[in-house]
Structure formats: C-alpha cells, structure tokens
Length: 248
Image 1: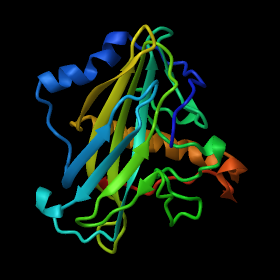
Image 2 (image 1 turned 30 degrees about the vertical axis):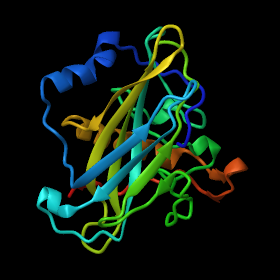
Image 3 (image 1 turned 135 degrees about the vertical axis):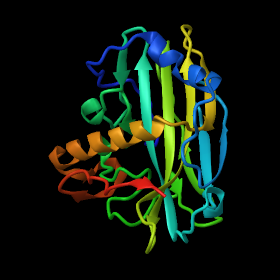
Image 4 (image 1 turned 120 degrees about the vertical axis):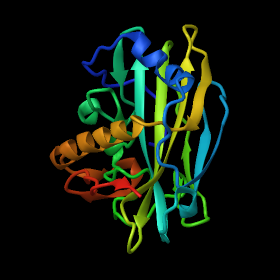
C-alpha cells in the first residue's frame, strides 16, 4: 500500500510454479464456491507501461446476503501474494517486509517501513481517519473504493491481490467482513505486464485472509515505532494488530 514499486525482501519460501501460476485458472474451471458477498464490486484497471493503476469499489447491500446491518463506515483491507517464478520465492514491495508473510505467501499489503502503522488500507495512524487518495470509505449504498497502482516488478512475476471490504464502524456489525474480490496481473519473461484474473473471490481465499491477518497480528507488536518520515503519519509505539474479523 499504496504502490508496490520494487522487489525487495525475498522470502525463504520456495514453491513450484504450477502451484502459483495455475491456481486461479484451475479454481475457476472447477467452479469454486464463492466467498461471502454482501454487495457488488466494480473493478476498473488497465495496464499502463509497467504498472496497473486501478480502482476497486464495493457497494454494501446487506440484502444481497440476507443480512441486516446499517454500517456507518466500511473500508478495505488488501492482502497480496507476489511470486518471482525465476527465483521461486515470494516478494514484498517498497516499504513492506516478508516478516508478516504467511506460510502460503500471502501478506497484508501495508507499508509500515514508510510510516503506516494500521493494517487497513489507507487508514491513518490516528486509527480513525482514512486517506481518500488510497481508500475512499463507504457505507450502505455508498461505494467503498480502494486505489492502487502496483508496478515495477521484474520478469516472470505473478501478482495476486484480494480486497476485503469490512465494516469499520457500526454499533452492531463492526469488524464484520462484507465481501472479497480477487484481482491479479502477471509479468511475462520479456518484462511485459498483462492483466490476469479479476473476479469476486472464492472459498479458501477467505481462509488465506484470516491467515494473513494472524501473521500481521503476530508481527505488529514487535515492529518497533512506526510513523513519521515522508508519510507525515504520527509516531506510534508499533504497528497496530487487527481486532477479530469475521464474515457478516
């Protein structure tokens, strides 16, 4: 968050290419069971140069999943999985570290090494306000929109992301997950990026999300002070763990 520009901090996790490059295709062919979707998604993004500038909007409608909730503020959490097929290792972007990567290579997409302490995408270090350049928050019937522009990755890189809409503020459904969306792009052997699969997410990705949250939460209290620098964020003692998050 907000832009992955460099391949830094290779993880000491090796996996066969077939488990990464074909996972999403095989799942779609097998008609995987969808994750919870209490609303509608609108993804927009096209390759420009070596990056994928995009917006991903979720409009919460509890009737879509047979629920009842008036969410005052819903916001995004993003997890990513970036794989270098040449070196067979997972990567982290600028301002990030594989210290909070999970065993399958997924990690919360946030930049505490640049000063962002909160795991929510675009949440300022005050823990209450969001930077609308990265996440324009929503509510019932009002889109919650994430903005990203990942790029600068080397040849034979697979970039997967899952955006998770969560009720951030409410009296009765705070910390409840409202929907999941998968998007991706790949960089071929000549270094040319191309958009891959974009789709509402499928089961098992919700489990991966819980795993990546748990990995962030284990790391966050040990991070040391986060803030200041070019971000202008207030300095806090350490990165902030997530509360318990569960499907609505």
